Length: 197
Image (cartoon, rainbow, N blue to C red; front, side):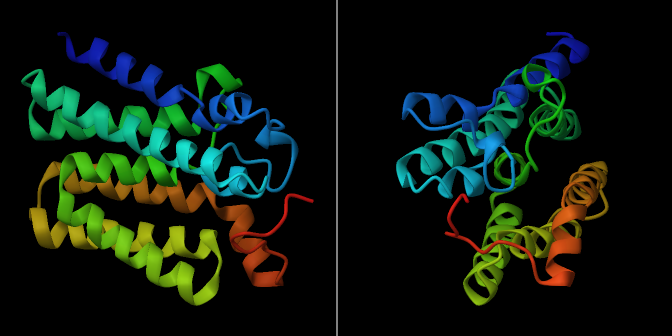
């Protein structure tokens, strides 16, 4: 397969809005119309339907992982596989199916990390869980995980181009959370499990 076609396929895969799909399957309102307005697992959880939130989380993670895994299986190099993961991540953030206004990309990024290196993914997941438990803020947990990702990547993978891809994903995650950072600073950020009102 041509590398450009791989990137396009990964982007299309990443664009699949599992938050919208799962919400429709469970007869829920469009997650873009309540809570944070973000089509992601945390916002779907605000609907009170944990199964829909879990399906969203699994779907968003899976598409990131599948992009990397599929590229590797097709014989592409590790950095090319990482770039396929980046394409899937960008597809989620700038979904062609949602007029290029997608989610924050946290779950998809985790899936990409899992495809690249399980230990990098586990380190990010551990940091996310620790911060989430301590603060109850999904956004704070995501920001902490984003910061640690290129660091753990550099430690575990060495100075490789793949680490640059991880750093780019982390940077986009932080940028996508700019509104959340402002809310965290002024004390108006919603906590995990808060209602959708």
